[in-house]
Length: 341
Image (tube, rainbow, N blue to C red):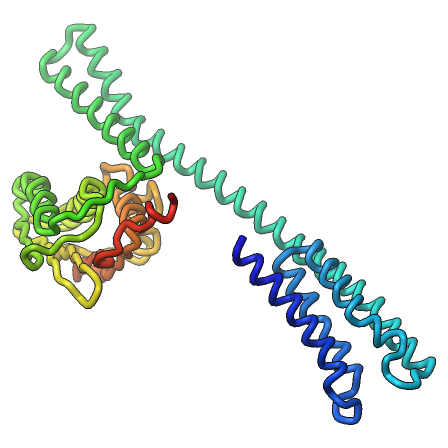
């Protein structure tokens, strides 16, 4: 609303300025026709910002401002000059209507394109979710049938059903967690404690994959305003991805430093890196090259970091590993919640 006010002031002010120039600028220096043509500028601005309504209202205001000159404020208007001014008003009106029409047509096209993209995204998301749920459902159905028919080991079949159900639950939790708007609970948190909890949680997975997890802790006593649970969730997604991208015997490094007014957290792996397609779809929900997973990890992490008014930067080259950098403003993280209030 405030922006609209500024735009209105700008349009009205520029129109009045042009009218004032008619009085202030001598005719022997600048021909009045040049000043007349300048009235098209606020009309274009009104159309671009407010559409057809803005174009017509600006044209009306500009015409009212121009009326004193139309009726002969300039001395001795000849019939040709009178016709020139009349045509100027007519053409200005036609121009306002045409410009407003083109702008609103462009708006409609963009809106339709946005709806098409939204529906395409919904369809893609639904297809990905169905794909992720399809395999566990087939497994559950198959092993349940084997139990019913008394074939194979019942205990093993039951365990496979449990694992398939857990996989489905993981998919559902990921989808719901991404779709649900996050409500940040901001507290002054010890950054070292947050990083330690993230590494402790991911350590068991790293050990199973025979990956070394190394952490460089931030300065002692460093505290940042954040939602620790949400931030842990974001960082765990990054570390988890780094472990998945690493090969046996490699190291995943979590480095934490302070640069100027920012807390910098870097998650570095030395895996195979990303190809061009993967890199371009890095934060696209449901996009994943993994055999397992929902493709929501990085999208969720970005969403959480954005809510903290931070940023995620990614560097990756095929065969050279990946470096993901999280930048959080010191003393200002999480103000998005205060802004919403």
